[in-house]
Image 1 (spheres, helix red, strand yellow):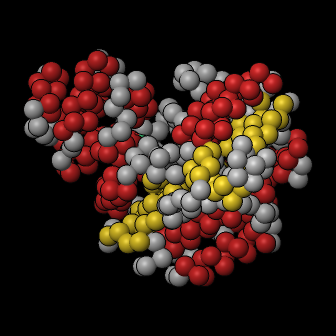
Image 2 (cartoon, rainbow, N blue to C red):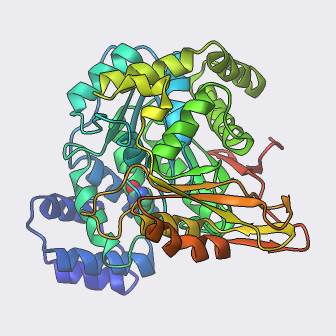
Length: 444
Ligand code: URA
């Protein structure tokens, strides 16, 4: 195999054969293809795309580069949810215990904050002692015993993706629909699932803001999953404003615990229930959305979902007393209110800028190797469409020092724009996409 010839062919709009993709990925994983050649190929794919057969071969090769969960003899359905990332999106922390309480096994593998978005692992690690680095064997055992495990990508799962993703991250080749699809699906297919729900974000805070590209991404991943025996469904949801109020690691754990007690913000709960309904339908536990929704409400009302969360925290080494005493989570020493400087209507609450302010406070990373602070972040009470008076509180900054808070006040204020007319906002859940096609949410 002469790698420069493959790069050349892709660069000029040609295709690689399945055997070529398999050999390339095997050799790349073994360290026999240098990073600069793989990065050049990723850029060629970024511009030229992949034919369906190439995408299948690449996904299978990345999946086959590592191990997977097997769940031999496990009769219960196994369903996961994956989001393309946002600000304030803590639905995973709610859904995994809710679904486990319903009788679904949820082996959830999540990521860290990426760019301006938050990451489930960073949020969970705000719980003192919580370990996300479980091996595959530990994950499978815990998921069998208590119905859920929430872990990070291990070196055992799709190592080719781990290497390729790190290269794409520093070579401006992340935003490619085939590369994102192969990356996400190679990891999800390694979880031994019987169903997968994708939450593909749209709006200014999403990696692919335009609905058409999000729909394309959803369709691509659904086709990959479905063809590999993992029925996959996607909801296209709004990320033109943060989800919920809390944005930042420990703050989001507190809000998730409130949600599991039935006291979560309305927008967060609406998206959580919409995704949870799809998970239950895929699991085959309910055959209609209304019954699925009642089942989810039931496990919150009974406390069963909160109990599963408590069990998971304990099983993964965390301080489970935080469930009843969220004040045991790390809290930032300084809080600064951001107040409205004029009366009007909240016209925009820009997630990308708010995500960057959280990074500035230390709650996210500038470099992959940065440590994140668990306690800092924002509570963003303002929502597009709210009427405000001068002096009303729009947000609270949680910071390590007064200087750190002052450094982001202007960014937070600019991100929450006050105007005079009601803004256009995206529906919280805009589209439902299945292998049969896409429909406006609620129409199907
Ligand atoms: N998340 C992933 O896991 N892979 C991508 O390529 C993009 C987001």
